[in-house]
Length: 194
Image (tube, rainbow, N blue to C red):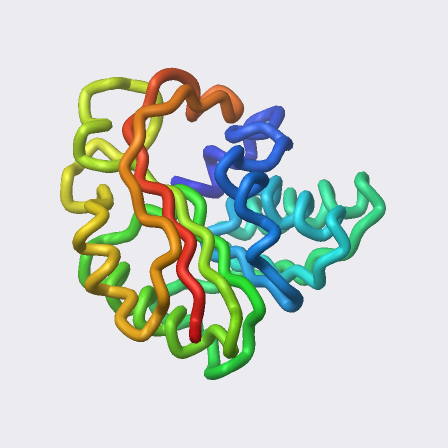
């Protein structure tokens, strides 16, 4: 599905960074990893800010588009194809982890969030934005099933060991390519490993 979507002309979510990421990027330090990086817009923007950036996505086409966008912009992004269900984030490795609209089944999401908490080094930060269940039926982005949408309290519980600096649900206008456009209900989070 994602290979087919990402193979279409243009960038599904645009080439500009996510607004929440741009507003929160000062919390990140190198190396940073973007999970479910799609076509690489956020990873490339972070590399343009001078960070060492890695990007992981399950789509071969998404990874190819990430590399092409990085080359076009004259930056380096270490992009690789991998299934997040099998991906090892390591321990005490990352100065930043970014998950922007990385909607996963609940069990996998909880496992990935625990892995993020282990994978961040001291002072490393997670920046996350995702759709909430209030997004259902809007037609402005996000998966059409409630199980894959994020509740702030559930995320807090999955990130045990991290210092939650911001975790809020907001309604905001999202303008990110043709797939995310319009009023949206999102959860925004920044969490730091103490």
